[in-house]
Amino acid sequence: MARTGHSSKSSDLIDDSLKQVYQEALEEQLPDRFTDLIAKLREKDNVTQKTDKDA
Amino acid sequence: MSAPDPKDEIIEHMQALRAFAISLTRNSATADDMVQDTVEKAWTNIDKFQAGTNMRAWLFTILRNTYYSSRRRAKREVADPEGSFTATLSEKPAHDGRLQMADFRTAFAQLPDEQREVLILVGASGFSYEEAADMCGIAIGTVKSRVNRGRARLAELMKLDENEPLELTDAHTIAVVANGNAAA
Image (cartoon, rainbow over all chains, first blue to last red):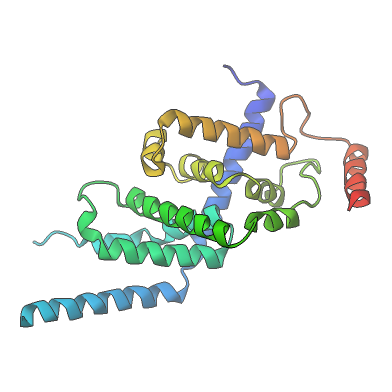
């Protein structure tokens, strides 16, 4: 079904707004808790690897 | 040369994962909890990730499953948790002459999670209908239908339907706002 000029314009506005909402969230800086989380996960991996080697 | 560690790839997608979580939950604190759960699950189950497939899609799938599980739990514990949230958003109608982001956000927050999810996946994150269908565990036709219904609802909430002009008269706007205030 062909879009009318008006509904097409509305659709474009919705598309642009959707992208903008997502883009704004994408540009937010990651909180420090995630740096800590990755460090903890890596540390856990290292401990597991060391235990496996020692066994 | 050794193969790249897929765990490093998880880190590369964390920003996008958080953007998806914020779009889905509309709440930064909840979104961060979802991202943390997702990263921990992905990290400890990295052996289940199939090399060569789309890591971002895999992570988004874990996040949405985590979100819906937690939502089901919350619904059992608290009656109508989203009703109060939606009520706080029923402010000035979204037709003060042009589409504004605040109006869009208000309308977007009122969509069911399932519609908001597919709109973000297909309309903003660049996933295909097929990828979105795989991630949500639904048929492609269902994704299309949710996208269409979501768009239609947004247009309706923002008074962008094709039978109504984009620019309403000031008098009309004032009357609607005045009626809303009188009803409050």
